[in-house]
Image (cartoon, rainbow, N blue to C red; front, side, top):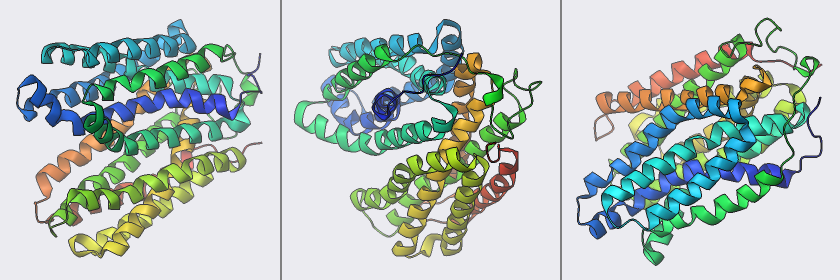
Length: 395
């Protein structure tokens, strides 16, 4: 049996939009915390639990949800998750106490945790091999847009309609994605001979921990470590110069824009040349950018910093679709959800490592910046070497 070859870009975009709810809800609520604290007459610090429970649900819930999706069907899991997000978002918006809001937020996060692995599995199942990189490239852009626009959308909605609107906005997005998901053809299996050149041998394909998957997991973890070093250090460097949060955010947008623009292109390059080449080129470019920013250190010029962030984003955008695709192609179709959930943990591995390093090594005046950037640079050099384990050109 084979996949449907007629899956449209609109269908891929619509399904990916559901995954965009995850980063959107992760970043959108940050700007609404002061208003939530005011309405419930609690401290703003206490409202931070709304972010903490969401992140923990992502870390723990995605692997579990991916495995459950493999058991009951990933399209069914997507549908259940979207309905759950709609219901929980409505309850959160109508919450009359902070305790009820926390409970609704936990439930919302639990359903949202099922979206990314289930959608990745669904995209793999319904998309032909020669278009999978393109599909994951679209998904990568959607995730980037969700993360980038979250604070902007959250700020506008909270100011115009109150904090309840940041939960209500999920409802039309989730319902639209649900309508597309329901009409998506039932996924079917793929013959072993469709496997790309360089994928694990048949004896390895029953295991998630095969050499390609481990390489992709490591590469995503290392690249995320470097990405978060830039995300966390840039505000520290510029704040030490007296910059306000608005201009700092504008500088950081160079990183996000590069990733959004390049992800679809990177996916197409992976489909055409294999997963290894665009990953190696993209990581090499990103490594060069980290080294340039490392040399500049806390006194780096703004022009060089912005250019480095933009180029790093472009390099990472070229890599991400190939990492997702190669990792999921390396496991049996019926275990894709589990693999996608485990792969998602690599982002948290990298981001948590960087957060701890910045907390212990970097001062408010930017001192220690070069140490963290040096760690990131070493990790990126290692990542370029590890790309040798990714699949090469297709037959």
